[in-house]
Every structure is written in structure tokens, then in C-alpha cells.
Length: 222
Image 1 (cartoon, rainbow, N blue to C red):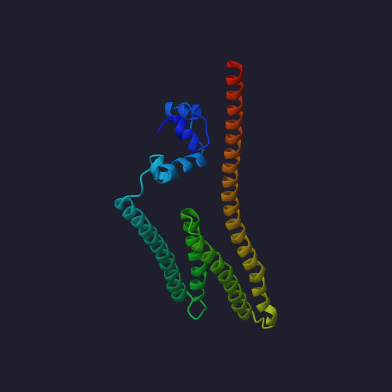
Image 2: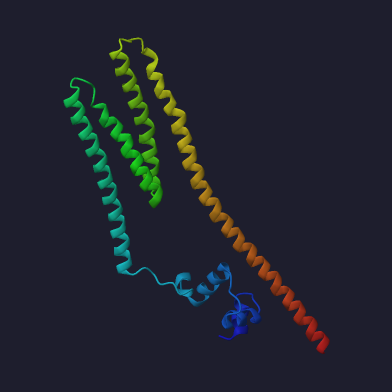
């Protein structure tokens, strides 16, 4: 296929094709997609990127498995520390509500998983970790206040359950934040697509301008 034939098929000038071939210019993403469709290949193949090999796929699976093991190991350390604290406090001051340590361990574990989810971009784990963190912090606070108040002889804590009402707006805010982040990602994708269409329209205008210039040149030559 000549440069002129290719230019006609994708609505470009042969000068642009010549620039691409000589390395003096680079087509935009939309044009690359057109060229890939024209030659019957994928965009990745067209720009020289190879599809993931079986070895690379196994490597990705191995990395995901490694992430899981790291999170499990970190969670195990959190619960080991909690168990050690429980045993020591039970030996030092027996008869107290030291089992609350395990409630604190739940939301501490949620913080650890939240950090890993943010690093490795696990959105579902991120959402679940924040949810567990919200409600377990409130539960820990409720039970701690209740047992401490009982130690000091305070019994009028009938309205303490209202502490859990704080979790409702926090949970709503988390859902809204998750929704807006997902929507922001979709809007970015739409902007990229719109930009590509704008580049295509600009290229078409340039092509028409070049055609008009060529016609004027032929007219003068005649």
C-alpha cells in the first residue's frame, strides 16, 4: 500500500504518512486505532507492545498471592500482639474486661489492611476496611465507656447507644466518597475519548486545508 493509498483510507495527507514513516511525527491515539483496524491487528501489536506471556501472567498471579500472604502475615502480627497484651493484663490484673483488647485488634487490623489496599489499589478491600474501622471503633468506644463507668459506679448510661448514630453519617460519607472516586475515573475516561475526537476533527480540518491548498496550487500551475 502506497502512502497516498493509506492516506486516502484514513483521511490524512500523504505528507503526514511520510512524516510518520520517517520518524518526524507521531500519529495520535485515535489514528493509531484506525491503522490497527485497517491492518487487522490490535493496538498493542501495532505499537510494538507484546501481549502478556504465560510467564508474565503467572508472575502477576504470584504477586497477587504474595500480597495476600503479606496481608495475612501482618494481620497475624496484629493478633499476636493483642493476644500477648491480653495474657499479660489478665495475669497482672485478673477479673477485668481485658477481652476488649481483641476488639481494638479488629480495627487495628482494619487499618493495616486499609494501608495495603491503598498501596495496591484494592478498591473493594479499601471499602470493607473503612466500614469495619468505623463500626468497630464505635463499638470499642461504647463498651470501654460502659465498663469504665461501671467501675466508678456510674450506671445512668441509657443514652450511650446513641454513640452508634455517628456511624450512619460516616458510612454515608464513605459510600459517597467511593461513588465520586468511581465517577471521577469514568469522567477521566470520557475526557480522554472527547480529546481524541477533538484531535480527529482537528486533523480532518488540516486535511481539508491541505486539499484546498493543493487545489489552489494546481489552479495556479494550470
